[in-house]
Amino acid sequence: MSTEALREYLAKRRKEKLQDFALPLLGIAGLLFFWWAVVAGLHVRTFIAPSPGLVAVTLVRNRAMLLRNLLPTAVEAVGGFLIGNFAAIVVAIVFVHSKILQKIFFPVAVMLNSIPVVAKAPILILIMGSGLAPKTTIAAFVCFFPTLVNMIEGLSSVDPQVMELMEIISASKAQILFKVRFYHSLPYLFSSMRIAASMCVIGAVVGEWIGSTKGIGALILQATYAFDTGLLYSAILMSTLLAGAFFVVIAYFEKITIVWPSERSH
Amino acid sequence: MSDALQQQGINAVLDAEACIRCRDVSVTFFKGRQSVSAIEGLTLDVKRGEFLALLGPSGCGKSTLLRLVSGLVAPSAGKIDVLGGSPVAARHRRDIGFVFQDAALLPWRTALENVALPLEVSQGDQRQRLQRCQEMLDFMGLGARQDAYPHELSGGMRQRVSIARALVSNPKILLMDEPFAALDEITRDRLNEELRRIWKQTGVTILFVTHGIYEAAYLGQRVLMLAANPGRVKEFVPVELPEDRTLRIRESREFVELAGRLRSSMESGS
Image 1 (cartoon, rainbow over the protein chains, first blue to last red):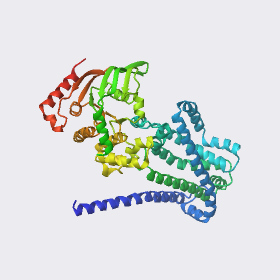
Image 2 (image 1 turned 90 degrees about the vertical axis):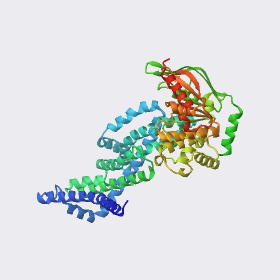
Image 3 (image 1 turned 60 degrees about the horizontal axis):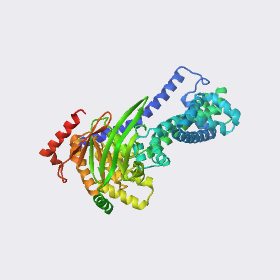
Image 4 (image 1 turned 120 degrees about the horizontal axis):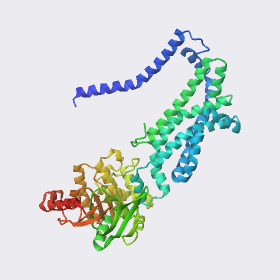
């Protein structure tokens, strides 16, 4: 390749890299500007919607209080995420090895999943009280079903030739599980965990709505009743950031774990 | 070549008895409410160390026959004997290696780790195992690529890895189910030559299923022609070509005649 062509290629690549970084920022800036323009232009009153500036001021001024309330929500979300996914993996492993148990209990799981979160939350709070436990459980429920479905698919969709190979080398069920099924299901697991990363935060927040005095969910309710829109939007922003950070962490673990090309990832 | 491989070759020459013996074997599957006969009345003797090519149209039960020999499918009638016992026993002794059409490598394992899989499952000495796997990859000409993942290898290299994996536990029988069908012609030719080398050096008994007339004629010592629906033996065609053959032999008159004979056998109704 001539140096001229190489230089051109590198310049093009540099431009693309810059665009990857700059264009999303441009989108966010555009949204903020649109928000500001609507609030300022239409003279929207503060108790209906705040301006971006007010939210920024509230964020800075109340940062200690916001972080204090973010902590229980994060604990519930992460705890629920871990419990829900772990339970789903265990149940999926059982289902894949016992079609009978799957036939009995899978419809039950589908039914439980079809109960809306806002309906599940009061039931759990009545049973478990008002501590961290019911919110963590709700977050776990929310994560459970997508991972269960994906893991059943991932554990059982191994290439039939590979399964035959394992039979020919006289592998045990446990060896097939740990050497083949488990790895094969990892891309499926990560794709459900990426969904679960934001879902578990929603679960925790909804749980806090029903019965809590702290956490982002409680803060959202209090701010709404007080018409404190600055605080309301700040609280929402905090939960969004939490879910976003969680998503990034999961995506990072996926990237370092799944080093082989898989039709399932991304 | 390693001592183990050489020893295996010598053993194969010493006892040239029948190592696969099928007597009037039938296999029937149930499909919905119907029974489908995949193989009917198959009688077959394969000598130890033989290279048998199986040729026939689709639906002739070629793959079922390989699964029968490896004990993955049980005969509905008749008797099958592998190395003096049941096929399942032979499989459990790791006397059977299998190569599939697509290499069926585990994508999350490197070439070396894929080759190690059968030994890992059988739990042997760790250090010996690693050495044996490296030896096998060297033997297949892939020593330099042992840490590559399957997606970093070409189709031909992947199939070499899968052959190394099939041979790593020193099997007495190698079953190959259209192993080169998905490869391009140049790669297929090279692997055909290489497979004859492997067969000679290891003395392993090979059953090689193929759709290709030239491949069957070039590789086998005998070609078993199968008829379809239900799968049954049509005829055995002996291959009377020199043992030391290169691919150039395909241009010889004997080879062309043999190929013609196989083709007319395949096309004749029965």
